[in-house]
Image 1 (cartoon, rainbow, N blue to C red):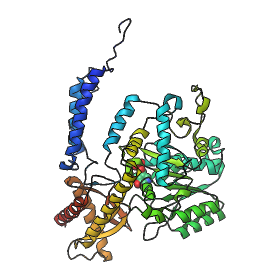
Image 2 (cartoon, helix red, strand yellow):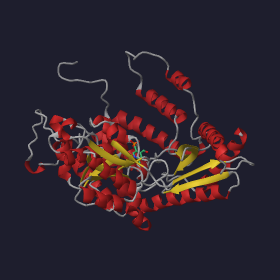
Image 3 (cartoon, rainbow, N blue to C red):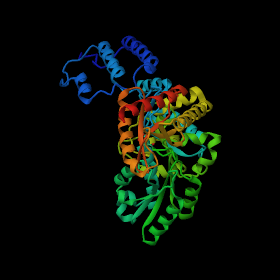
Image 4 (tube, rainbow, N blue to C red):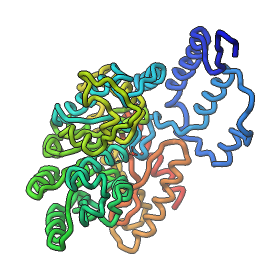
Length: 489
Ligand SMILES: Cc1ncc(COP(=O)(O)O)c(C=O)c1O
């Protein structure tokens, strides 16, 4: 290091950054245009991918940045699974809005630490506005508290911990759950596995979960819920929370949130909604009946990286009473010397699990602002219509059995000619065949679906949270499924 100046190797002057950045943006733009013409995935093996990276130890010397970026862009473009592909309908990961990609670049460039208001004045306010806009879109309390987190698991966990503290009392934070009595939480058996993680990490243990049965529509059986809560009370247990699913991961089922909310009010339980996937549908007037009751929730989890088309990672938790988040999470690091002034209560480190926090909200805020609520509603509506179209195509096809359509998820299976799909002794064969079909479809690169298991039957499951998917992709998916199914018989 020179006595008066320092030129750190990682630093970059504006001119170099501009040259490298322009080149990379050009490559990304071409990549975006090229996605529909690519296979969804090359389905390469672990060995093939590792061979691309080689086994070199961490290099002691650097690499020329232009060549490094070129090679890395190529590596990613040529060897990734493209979830921005029109025929990617697996799991619940959306096509990433290009505006969101630019948002992430901008967020990383300014790099505000959104843990403290003073460290991120504009960013913290944009996050606050983003949370209010999402609440508005969902028809939730406009003065709710909330924050951005990494994904649906964490978004639900934040609601879970807020409820745990609110219902089990302040002492739970110091004494742990053992002092709070045998607490239990209720959720349908279709609930996502985040709940096991939350019960485990919170110290309650997964044994605290009461798995409530579902009806044929995969929605929580409300009578069974009521019976279980009262049986547990009689047995001296301490019910404290009910989790409703607003769009289950397997079939898009939406629990009866009016009934669950009423039960929670009567019984003094925390009402949490897992809307990680489905909550944005509450913005569509035609779904008002299905989502009635969600606005009464004490907390809601929803993921912009699912159905608001944000690049990963972006999820959020909304809590009706913002103080519940502070109660559950606030500790004051001694090294924080924020001059609070009028910023009291505006520091996100008090609202959730993270201390230092990135600017996840920007990409979501930018996309919402770019096209507005109306366009988001229309994209969501179109996704639902496409899933419906797939259900109808499968229903009309002699070799396919349409099983369910909920929100933008359709489940179906391939049934070979001459096989009676209602025969109990054919179910194992059909499940095995369709399990192999999901694999064949995934590795084909022609389209990508995942699976659901409903009533023990293995099904193909397509989920459309993808503004690039269109009607012809649905027709193509049925054709591909039948063709590959026939080849596997
Ligand atoms: C209903 C529901 N909840 C929670 C999650 C978990 O979300 P993430 O994978 O973002 O943690 C998912 C994921 O698909 C989901 O569908």
